[in-house]
Each structure stands twice: as C-alpha cells, then as structure tokens.
Length: 115
Image (cartoon, rainbow, N blue to C red; front, side, top):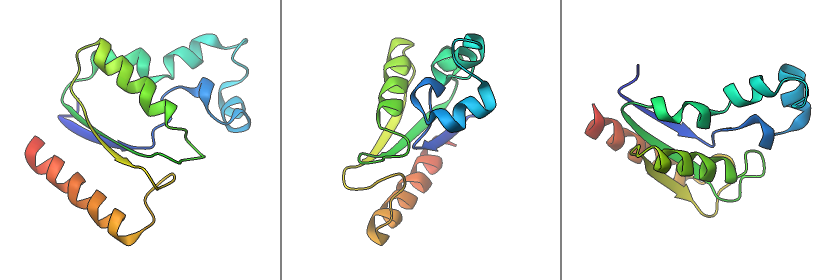
C-alpha cells in the first residue's frame, strides 16, 4: 500500500472517457458492467490509505475535469483526505514553463510533507 501518491488528470471512471479507447479494452458497458464498475477508482475510494494530491488542468479536453470532481465526491463521502492543485488556464498537463515549475515544486513539497 502506498503512503502517499499524486495523480494528474486521472481517468476515474471509464464510462466518461473516449469510447474508442475504452471499448477496445473493456468492451461495451452493457456487456461488461462489472469491468466498468471495478475499473472505476470510485469503487476503490473507501480503501484509500495515505495522502493523495490531485492535479488537473481546468480546460483539459482529453480527460475532462468531471473525472477529478467525481473522485473528490467519492473521497469526501468516505472521509478521505486529499489535496488539489488546479490550473485554470491549462489543458491536460501544464505547458507554460512557469506553471510546470510551480507544479513540480508543489509535488515535491507534497512528498516532503507526506513522507
């Protein structure tokens, strides 16, 4: 089990991601509902131990912010702690040098505090 972790722009439920990619590996949701449920991090949120840093660009067109929002709702429902770092003007990952430096410093600081 991990003591601390971070995730950036996570796909938290396969029902909300690119169907071409998802169905290639999981099949159709109607035919394999258990795979979609078990493959969702929300299914496992109750088992989270340790600290978690979530990072997401708010204009991400690849993994929409709703993935992170749904995970936050699950974490809150289970009383699990988390930290979040949002980038209002970035997409899937920060591309501006200043934002990338800021993100790396925040990740490093998170691990320093958490370990």
